[in-house]
Length: 140
Image (cartoon, rainbow, N blue to C red; front, side, top):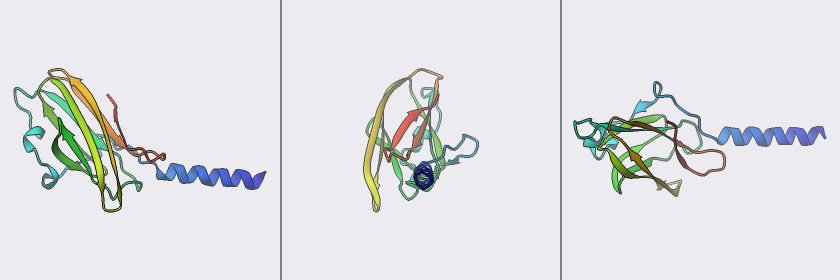
């Protein structure tokens, strides 16, 4: 029985070790300019008063992969682990897509629709839990 418990504990430690770990808004690094393809989306303006804040977890699992963020099928940026950016948009409905792949990284895509109001701020987290299913979840 003791041997079985040790095996279960080792398996659990392996699974936990494969999950990514959340970053905070204070510790996330900004996405560098060389991976921003639509810089106007990262600058506020009078008509773009709504904010979509996207942050990516840190951790070994998936760390070699770059994730492409698209807004209404227009690639805005590539984000890596421990990075974050604020997209400034006009109030309305949007289709946010997250793609990864290339090299040693699997081709994974996930997306969601969102509606945002003037002056509103929505926060999204990109995570890769131990089940290997890339997720983009709303945090607030």
